[in-house]
Length: 259
Image (cartoon, rainbow, N blue to C red; front, side):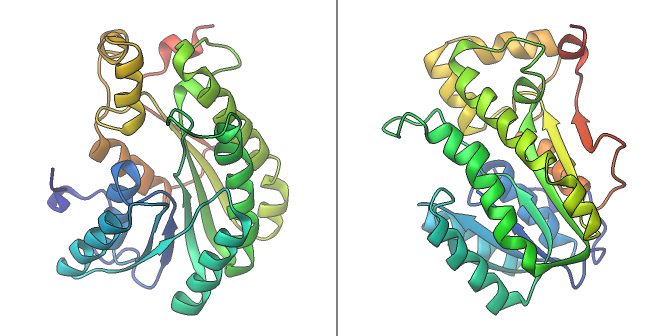
C-alpha cells in the first residue's frame, strides 16, 4: 500500500542537510520510516539483508518524490559486512546525524538457534559502535522495540514470541548501558516501544504459529497501530525531545504497566 506522504509527521525541509541510516528498511516499519525522514529532507540509507530489489524500488520511490536515498546491503550479524556498510555511508554521506536501529528478527525458519540474540542484541550494539565515529554532537540514535519486549521483565508475552522478546530486551539493556558514553559525546538516545503492529512480518509469523493471536491482542489493546502509523512515531522520535527515561511509548500500555 503506497505511503501517504501528504500526512507525513515531519514538516517538509525540517531535516534538510541531515543524514540518516535506517536498518532493516527495505520493507515494513523501516521502509515507511525512511520515507518519512526523506520527505522531511534527510538523505537516507536504505539497509537490507537480502531484499535488494525492494530496497532499490524504495530508493526509486523516494527519488521520484524529490528525496535522496541510497541502498546498502549488509548482514548485521556479520561484523565485516556492517563495517563495509559504515564505510560506504562515510564515503557517500560523510557522516550520520540519525541512526534508526529498526532491524530485528528471530522468528524466521532455518536460522541458527541463537540468531535472535545475535541480531537483536549483539548486532544492535555492533552497528552503533561502528557508526559512532560518523556521528557528531547533536546526533540521535533511535532503537525500535515492542511493548512485549520492553515490558518482558514484568509482563508475560505469547510463548511463540518469547525468544524474540527476551533478546530484544537484552538488546535494549545493552544499548542503555552505552547512554553515559553517548551523552558524553552529545549524542541522544531514545527507545520507541509499540504494541504488535498490524501488517508486519512478526505479526504475520505469530498469526501463523498461533492463529488468532493478533486479533486477541487487538481486542485486549483496543487498537493496534498499522505500519505507517507506527513508522510516523519512529520518525518523530528522531527529532522530538528525549523523555526522562529515554523511552517513547506508543499506544496504550495499561495492561503491560499494571503488573
